Image (cartoon, rainbow, N blue to C red):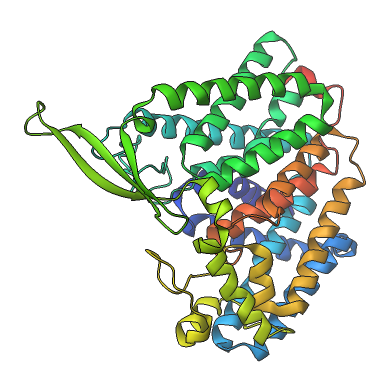
Length: 448
C-alpha cells in the first residue's frame, strides 16, 4: 500500500511543473490528491515524525488561526471556505519534504523536469516575441496563443501574462542540475551562461517589471553568497546587460512608437504606434495604445499609482478590524459593499480582487493574529535553511524563498489556486534541499 500510494503521488509531483503551464485546475487537483494520499499513508503507517518540526507546527497553528478569525469575518462563508481548504498548501509542502522525495535519484528527476519545463517556456515565449509586429504586438506561441494585452507575453500560459514571474520563482532551483548532475567543464559553463542570459532576457521582455526586479534581487544575492559560480554569474549579468542594450536599440517593439502621455496609474503610458497600413503599405497608419506605466514613473509618483491605492484600501480595512481582519477572501467583497474602502483608480475600477501584497493581504484579511503567525511561519522556514547554510543547494533554496517573500513588492494572492501551488511548491522544495540530498561527491559524475 505504501509503495503504490507513494508512486502515484510521486508521479503527480513529477507532472506538476508541466501541469502548472495548463492553468490552476489540474495543479490544484494534483496537490489535493497528493495531500489525501499523504495523510492516508501517515495514518496507516503512523509516521507522525514530521509533526515535531517547528515550521510544521507553526504552519498548522497559522491555519487554525485562519479558521478562528473566520468567526469574525464580514462574509463568514467566504472566509470559512478559504480557511479550511488552505491546509492543502501547507500539507503539500510537508509532503514534498517529508514523504515524496526519498532519494537523490528522485530529486534529480524532479529537478530535470523543472529545468526542461522552464526551457520550454523560454523557447515558447521567444517564439511569441520574435513574431512581433507593430499593428498587433507579440504574435502567436506554439499553441496559437496571442497576448490580450499589448506589450506583454503569455508564453504557453494561454491568457495569463505570467511567464516572467514563473521563471523568476523557479529559475534558481532549476540550475541545480548544472551544479550537481553534470560534469563541470567548458561545455557546461557555456550552456549555463546561455541559460542564465536567456532566462533574464525573457523575464525582461515579458513586460513583468516586478518579476525582473525579483530576478535581479536573487541574482545579486547569488553572486554574494555562492562564490563557486560568482564569475559565471557576473559574466552572465554582463551578457544580459549587453543583450538588453542591443535589444532596446534595435528591436522594433522598442523603437516604433512615440510617448504621448506618461502617468503612474494603471495603463498610464499612452503611446502612438506607427506602421504601414494593411491595405496600402505606402501609407503610414497609427494607433494609440494604453500600456502599463514605466517603472520609474510608478516609483517616483507612488501615491498616484494603482498599487498605492490598493494598499490604502487594505490599510483602511485593517484599521477597522485590527485583531482578526475582515476575513479571508473578503477584501473585494467588503470594498464593493462599503464606499469607505474604495479608491478611485483610473482604468482599473474602485476595488481590487485582493491587496496585491502577501503581508497586507494577511494584515487586512486576518488581522494582527494572522499576520503574526504568517511571519512566524516564514521565519521558521528560513531558520530551517539557515541551519545548513554552508551547502550550495540550501543557499539556492534560501534565494528562491527570498524572491517569493520579499515584502516590498506587488504579488498575487496566496489564496488563489495557481499562485498558492507555485509558492508552496517552492517552499517544499527549498526545505527539502535542507536535507542535503544532493551533497555527495559521487553525484557529480552522472545523472543516472
